[in-house]
Length: 278
Image (cartoon, rainbow, N blue to C red; front, side, top):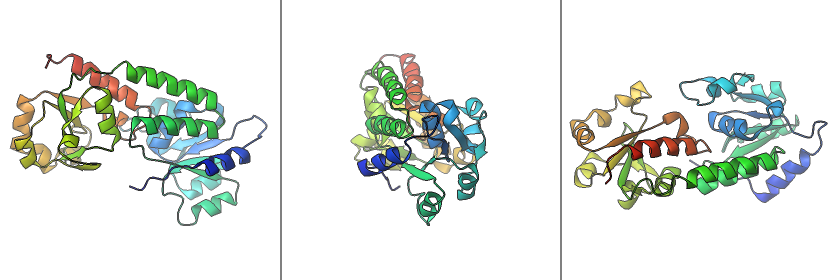
């Protein structure tokens, strides 16, 4: 996935362009779940024009109840033209196909949010986005609270070798926020130690040769189709899961890499503390 980071020039142009509405704050819409989670964390409720439909779906969204207070959108250009926000938070890469120019002509600016690879990037994106929507102080307070919560979890993993695994056999190696959160918790990421970088797979043959001390299981109970993947049902994996401790990672707090990672880390830490000492 291509990562597009808003640069200083874009930040300055957005801030200047959004100076002075009567209420002092730009009207903002978010067009996908990851953007919704960030916006609902840092925005003043009165400046939120709309959130995506995903945010209102409790099966994927941890903020569905709050999100239902706002009009929903499908993340389409037509929605933004109808809603007329000053600023729309979108996926990186969404600005192609002439969309940015069309919307700019209607006074709507797009902020493409990067997909984070680390906890530090998550915090930086939160600060920058908060500043762009006129909420720098609130964003800083939110980031500071998240940092304190994450720091309080340091070392709970006691150096266990953990393997993050999805039913498809997918895992996360170095250069991912999963790897970063694992290290912050005091866990050793087995995928990273085995030379896996980014989002990849952990073959069953490798699992037999290099099993973990602990499994972090993502989405094993969330998606029926994914849960029926051959890897997830394989007798070799099932045998390992019967013998090696495993922790369920809350899927709706894990997929975007935003501030909700703190709540996911707290859930993991709580389950770790209930395991026998290594």
